[in-house]
Amino acid sequence: MTHRRRFLDHSARVAALLASAGLWPIAARAQAAVAYSTVAFAAHGSAAAYKALGMAQPTESTDVQLQAPDIAENGAAVSVTMSTTLPGVKRMLLLVENNPAALSAIADVSDAVEPSFNLRIKMGESSNVYAVAITGDGRALFARRDVKVTLGGCG
Amino acid sequence: MSEAMRIRAQAAGGKTTVRVLMSHEMESGQRKDAAGASVPAWHIREVVAALNGMPVLTMHWGPAISKNPFLQFNLKSAKVGDRISISWVDTKGDRRSDEAVVAAA
Image (tube, rainbow over all chains, first blue to last red):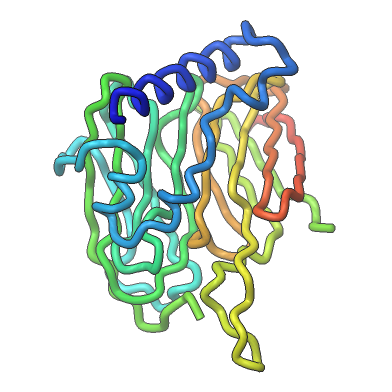
């Protein structure tokens, strides 16, 4: 099962690369993009989200950075910046452990984009927030910040 | 129909900073209305940024991105005059696409 998933994922990545290089037929471009994973975006907790994405649990690394407030006054809009100094990063993930669904965002980058993103996210309660960087050869590394929320942003 | 996205792309020191402010309710599906019923999830799920017509970034978003989403990212080597387009698709299938030109910072 994992082999098939990896093969499909690899095919999708090659297709996306060809598409971004302009070598893919225009009509097929819509199909070339990586599919939206509804399962991953509904998973409870980071471990379940990584599993749903078909990836190994990441290891902590100072090569990934996450800026987030220590205390967020308004859980409806918490500004976070995830970035990495690792070379060859193809994908970044942002997760909020204690949200109903932990996975908040996936960023698939081409070589034209720096692996660095500032986003505003909703946090339902105080929680660990994770930024994950995945390199082209499949290594997954993360940074973590503990963010306290005074007013939850989910309801 | 949503309002136009505000896109600012500024080139300085060999890199271009792109800031986007989108207009969208981004309902997570967790909220309850006055009658106590759950407001169904309705949010942007995919964002594609293109530089001069070529896609350079694809983001998939879950329900936890804030209302009226803000996104900031950097292009490694765009130049003044290059075109940036940002397109999104939401969970209802609605789409929006807006463009901006890279300006000097």
